[in-house]
Amino acid sequence: MTPTAEPAQGNHRATYREVLAEPRFRLLFSTRTVAITADSLRITTFSVLVFAATGSALLSALAFGIGFLPQLFGSLLLGSLADQLPPRALIASGYALECAAALLLALVRMPIAASLGVVALVALATPVFSGASSRLVAQWLEGDAYVLGRSLNNIAASGAQLFGLALGGAAVTVLGPHRALAVSAALYLGCALAVRIRLPRLQLGEFGGTPGSARGDGGAVRASLHGAGLLLRGRTVRRLMLAQWLPSAFVAGAEGLIVAYAGGRHFAPGWYAVLMGCLPVGMLVGDLLVGRLLRPLTRERLVVPLAALMGLPLVAFAAEPGVGLSSCLLLLCGFGFAYGLGLQRPFLDALPRDGQGQAFGLLGSGNMTLQGVGPACFGLAAAGIGTGGAIAVAGGAVALTAGWILTWHPPTSPVPVPNCSTGSENSTEQHACSSPA
Image 1 (cartoon, rainbow, N blue to C red):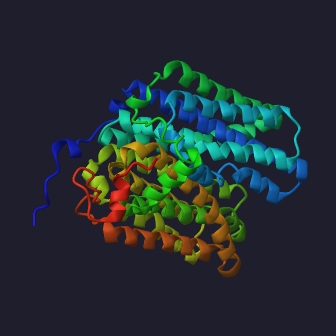
Image 2: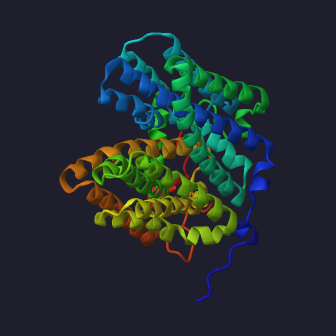
Image 3: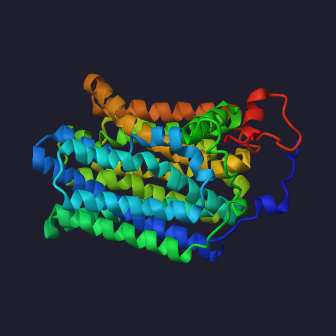
């Protein structure tokens, strides 16, 4: 049987040059990259500061992860604001809030609990700002240009995280932790000013917002909870979110065991850092090649094989490979992360127009939260079956997730999305077509 042909525009392959030619995307892309560098610098420095003050590895680890875990709650309680408030003010305010928090940590000697509370409060609001930014990108980049925009963000995020971690180590050594935090505050301030000055001021109607819905009966919290419920009750949206959440969480669980694995295998000092760097390098190469060389329909057909490629190399850790093979396996695992590019267009098509900001915020915050939970779960497993075995179990979980994706995302056709123009017999799909506010 010959598959139904896609419209020519639907299989048009965009280029990175075409995406970067959009000045508004270029502004959001560059400020986001700088902000991720500042995030990594702040996270590393704050963790060092807490450890120096307390000597507690537990509190140091909590300082490292406290900016991730509250994001899901923030998305559930405040996510609707991403669709209700003017985006320029919202995004600039987000960077300004990050700047204020970094300055507070740098200049004010607070109890550790208060410092952790400051970072957690900022994390609660993060999904609102990031959701508004992602919504603008989705509206300014159409078709395959949107997918390549996501690819560029992924590539920049990997590079910025690596650079920020390296910068954090150097800044703490040269300047000390408090001045290093001040450097991160300056980077956030630059992002806030760039967005405030250069991003066009958009009225609510220009980006699809519906003023007043967030202030209706029950306010923003009730609107956010209601909107999140509508999104997650929609079967297509729920599946596409889980398909992006679960593999990342399982791989994060395996990644959290790399240091212990290297120590248990008595690798030479410093090799654990090489192994940890293989994942982001593989991710960068995968996003670059899959995003640039493959056509949109081909990317969507390769979702399941690439997702399986994330997990199967990790299964080989059951045999406890040496340094060289472990590095190659982790590079392949990182390359498989490019599976997510094939889900971007179906995910965007499945979203209600008036709930895109909240949906993007929920997607990102859920991803961050589960990546924080994954290492804890597989760390417990490693206590019983060893680090190699736990990493293999994480890889098997990714492979099983790829099999689950195959049951509803066949490689010969795009993911079905709700038909919002003609209605749907399935009540959950009707929820996905409704405004979540």
